Image (cartoon, rainbow over the protein chains, first blue to last red):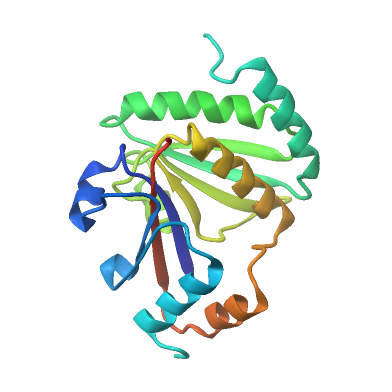
Length: 57
Length: 148
């Protein structure tokens, strides 16, 4: 299952700080295993997912 | 109480909500500790939900309903909004959440999320769909945003 959370960085400052969020949007994959900074196309997100958790499981 | 949404936005949102295909259930989790942001968000959601009969809102206190918070993985997170599908009495969780106050840019995100869930379609490419379907472990995405 996929849990996809939009997180308001202002309201969740501790969580933001724990990942060192300095610009938005910033996408954290599996609690820090992967990261996509900026609003990138879907393909970039897919590439980072594959890099982080593997091509196929 | 004074409305958060100005009249011109209400008109626009009402029009966009014509696109809502199927019912959407919003589960909103609040806490005493974050009462101020929860209260603002609650009012905003009340005003949004009033603009379409496809939308329903339920409000839950994290400490009063720990089992429900556990089920929806919102423990320790408030304000937390679960945007789920509803078909008759059956609620289907797609794992879509917004944590915080969905104002400014994020108000648009909220409206788009509602349309997506109402359409029961992520809009993702076949390649991404296939990849996600192939996963054997849970995937957690946290997209940090600000209203500006």
